[in-house]
Image 1 (cartoon, rainbow, N blue to C red):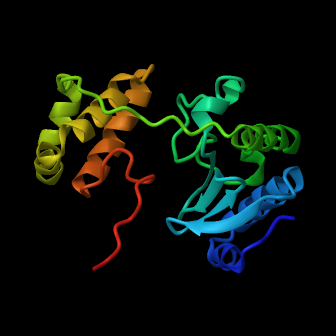
Image 2 (cartoon, one colour):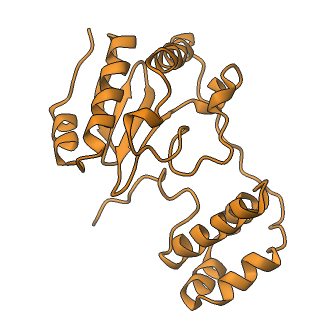
Amino acid sequence: MGKKDQRVDAYIAKSADFARPILKHVRKVVHAALPAVEEDLKWGAPHFMYKGMLCGMAAFKQHCSFGFWRAKELAQEHKELAKDEKPGMGQFGNLKSVEDLPSDKELTKLVKAAAALNDSGAKVPRATKSKKPIPKIPADFLSALKKSKMAHANFSAFSPSHQREYIEWITEAKRDETRERRIATAIEWIAEGKSHNWKYEKKKKKK
């Protein structure tokens, strides 16, 4: 049988008014789809466990997120999980209401598919370290960096891999408005010393 965690109850209770219905709904659907699922709190946010990491959700000031741990593998059969123009952490963009989520039927199908992957025993593919040279900084991105002394200094101090992540994220945008939005977001994050994948990185324990 599955197991709920009181820390998740507390997390939901402390979330913003708009976020609570979203988190409660996700929680309900995941447990209904997979009765054996167990809850945990990882990186400060609720996660659902089944023979390893399955999926997780989080609440922010103005939106929520929900995503699957093995999204890339799931996306091979479920194209709706392929991230494109959806901002925010997770595979469903910035969630501001329950209506922003896929239908219960679709979510149930995805939860069961994710569980099947974990049942298979196949390990999550590890990302190989790229030895590619850092691509040239696009002119519009460089111009934006120069307008913020903090962002420019932080970006120059980033490791090659962190620089490459931002450059590739920006250049992969398919539309001008998406590119502009990504540049603005990048400048904000870089000025705060954050890497592109800062939301997924484990917070360092305070010494």
